[in-house]
Image 1 (cartoon, rainbow, N blue to C red):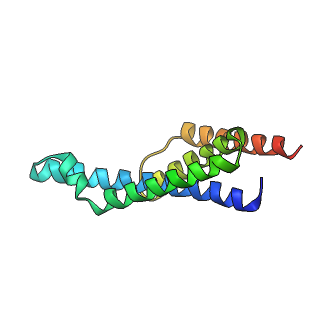
Image 2: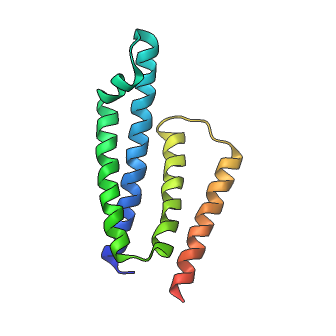
Length: 124
């Protein structure tokens, strides 16, 4: 894999994770606002800057992912989604203050070991 392809792949993964975190934050706010003031959660979400920007970033990540797939074999690219999972768990715990268990962290460690294993296999 070339450096530009790796950078594109990492951009796709990081932007996807970032978009998901923004969507979660926006939806949490939309649900709270609908619960306090009434109205539709969908309407509140559609007017939430966090949701709108999250969707835009997620769309950009989808375009980056499609470009990545044009250059990188799926068997190499797809395991990098595991990195996105780890980013989301970390951001969920630190940015969104969601509770995580030792099982979550242990599973996340296994995901990282799996990604490292796949990448080590590509070196040979």
